[in-house]
Image (cartoon, rainbow, N blue to C red; front, side):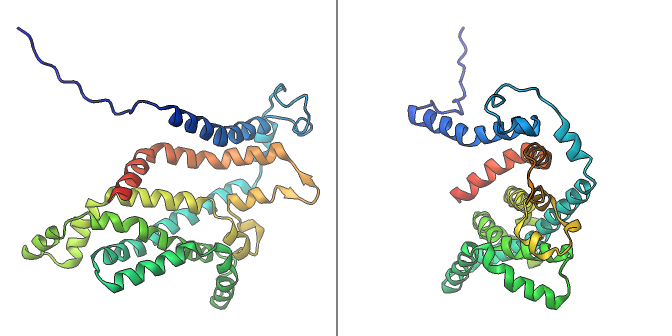
Amino acid sequence: MTTATTRRPSRWMPSTPVASTMRFLLFLAYGIPIVWILTTSLKQPGDVLSRDAAFFFEPTLDAYVAALSNGGLLDAALQSLTIASATTVLTLVLAVPAAYFLARVQGGWSTALLTGLIVLQIMPQTSMVIPLFQVFGEWRILDQTIAVILADTALLTPFAVLLLRPFFRSVPETLEEAASIDGASTWRTFRSILVPLISNGLATTATLIFLISWGEFLYAVNFFLSPGNYPLSALLAQQVSAYGINWPGLMALAVITSIPILVLFSFTYRFLKEGLTLGAVK
């Protein structure tokens, strides 16, 4: 007596020469700079520009010890965490209902609003620095964290709305109609039915906003008048001075500031992969 067995199809497509070549080129484009950063952070300052020590050198952790002993590192890390977390929450609070509205509105209004969001999205960040500086100066919030949070929220909200809208469009309107027949209010339907159904999109959007906000630099160096309030990205820029660059110290600080992002990315990679794929298809 024989039993039939079914084999699950492989999730991986066979690799083609073109795909293999692209993977190799991507590895070179992204892998070599990372290797260079790591190796430079383990060198002495005199070995960085030496050809003899390009590949063979005595590793040292002096740059990491100096970076960790920097008294402003913890303050800058807490500032980056505050900016990234608050920006993520505030952006989602604004973007989620806006994305739902655009997903349900039909006709010319929807096209006009989407066009406006795209225009806002493609505007360079530098064009907003001077107007925002004047506005925040009138509001007396310059040199305060709230100024950077508001600026980042204004910058990232259009991006979040465009990213979330396809997820809301994928939810059938019949679910809302059924909830309305059962007596649920619009707010309860939105909160209890729609938002849980797009949880993957929310996780994807929140992760991307946090990652972008964590690397905030331009608004920070313009709206913080006191260098002691700088986040990690601006602290990195302070390592470059008129007296030269301490390359091992700069690279060690770059590695340290990247660790939280790598940890977050490792935990959210599955959500990012699935969410961006679903959002593109929908």
